[in-house]
Image (tube, rainbow, N blue to C red; front, top):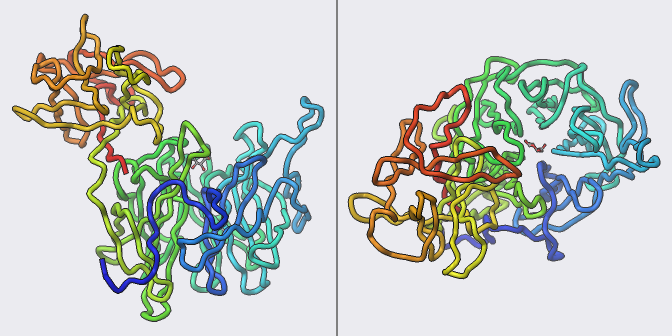
Length: 476
Ligand code: GAL
């Protein structure tokens, strides 16, 4: 790292706190640069749904400004055919509000009208069946936004979304349509308050979510995730020379879980002193077992060529507001892994929370949790390339009647040694010395499943993932 760097580092540790010492609640968000500040808008699910706005000059220290849109915000129509019901009333619940869902708010400044315009995903609070976009606007960046209604753009479903402003001021809205099968791009009217035209369907049928767009050296890049709810998956990027022209196929971005994150937005950081622009990826690290423990991942994007994008893990990023991203640092890592079942979106875990070494710990699979230490494994390689799988002080072993248990031992006997064999796709089988492999068994119930030792079988790929395959993901 450059010793002359004077600025504070942006550190990938959870949780991110604002200047009052409160966790920053700005998920699925967006940033807008205005008058020397970065304004960060995002979902806040504390109490009732709202959009919170924070600001910072250095992207490290964040000041909470206001909950700029709440379910009690003023509502005023501008165009017909939008629903002004910000929070529907529930007839079956004595007319109380349903607590509408507001997700992925994005804000642009409109030069022509001098107003800040927010687009977002809106649902009725009971289910995700309305699949609408919604608009709000305001005369100041962090003032009280007026809700302008929700609607289905050109009659389409509209869920995960993003906004993008091109160099000529034309704005585009991109959102997931047709039960998330397609991403559709719309050109907005010059005031950004309505849709002018549906201009493109991107990767039809490929079920992409969490879109974010940027432009560099005249080339557009769109990043997105696959569709796995709160669970992270392999991100992808694509490029195009014209927004509404031909887009490249989707190409992988980051690792198989996008470093345990889902794209929220990309911030261009324009170096005032050096005329260079750097690009920072901001992703949500949703916690599927505890939403309020969700955090963020900040990573610099790099560009091996004008049509290639890459996202590598770094622990810290130094951003000088006058120069852009000036340095990064990557530590040695935790040496721990999560082991994700390819079959079931579940993670290998030591199944007993007791620390009493005399109690039997089973091996099981559970829904991803970033705080659950029982899902964090050390792989210790020993003789013949065989490995011990260790969770804290405990080691996975074959118990009586072929059960899988964890015991506190360092013996070199076969019952503790596992052969990790990589497949062509980069997944692993975890095999015992007698040729059987760990297999996720039984129905997935409430985010839990059991693990048994079974002979290796041929799995029909049409059934989805293979319960005998695992992926190792670094704990960061
Ligand atoms: C994600 C989506 C999030 C949120 C979540 C709810 O796939 O990107 O914005 O909608 O699903 O399950």
